[in-house]
Length: 268
Image (tube, rainbow, N blue to C red; front, side):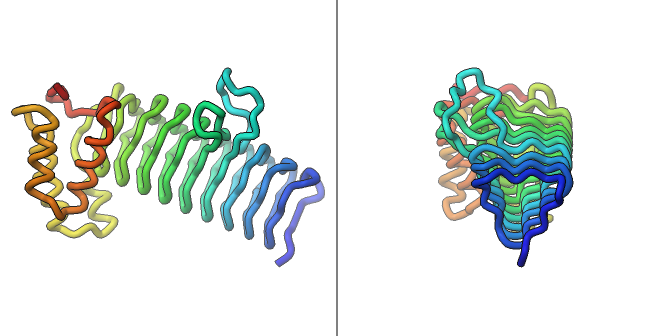
């Protein structure tokens, strides 16, 4: 397949352009950038820096992809930005590459939808099938697992980890790690339950969801310490993958605070 490049577009020498790429009016593609097979830049968008865009991804007007990070410590190091296949990036989105202080890479997985005005900061690792609604913002070094849904005007502060299949409500400020399958709302965010709608839509087994609900009530009860309750849930559901995902996340987050329910229990 041949590529189509509008005469008003600028493709710098050195850029790698895959088969079947469409570059619309007034786009700019930098010398160190790579556009995979079938990528489409609709118009007025910029892809620059050491940036790779995966096959069939589509970038809408006025998106800024790969410009230098908004980090005062950035010193021009050749950090990278990798965006997966079948990703949709809507208008006015900004995604920055990594920095020397964060692994030198920002990564977005496959089949993500990044809606208008969203921002993915330096050194963020975003999984696949993630939906970021209008004006969602991630500060640097955030880690977002697969199938997370972020509602409009929500965001996360630096170094936050959001577990797989979690749901974040609109206007929510996530300052602490959020468990897989959890739902968070508020400013600052509070854990308000499980993402049961998402679990059902994605075809999770009814029994597995029931076990997860039981484990959730156990883990976030008021009696005992959090670690004791987590150990109890792990022992009762040793072969339940959803429960074990939550257990491993909490145990692994021992050096990071967790988003907790409103009941106010502590991790002591």
